[in-house]
Image (cartoon, rainbow, N blue to C red; front, side):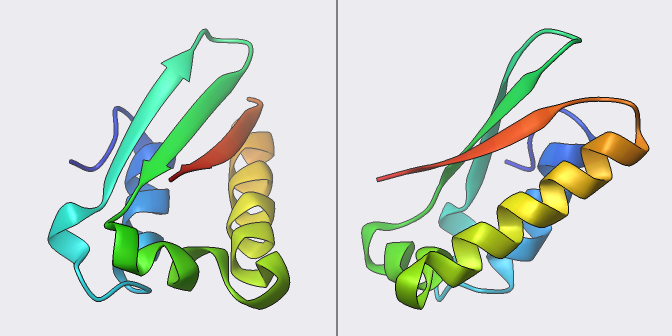
Length: 82
């Protein structure tokens, strides 16, 4: 599942490029028009690849999401669900 909107689709596409099981990537968007929360679900064995050493990959995904949301005049945060 790619998510409910363009931000969710973007995060799903980025995550699919990082993991070994892209078919198990799912992004669920929640929240209202003021602020969105995107929950990223991946296979258990892919969790480390999405988080990265010291959280670098997760931080980069959050930065990209924040920049894309700001460009659209929105606010969004990313949660990586384990």
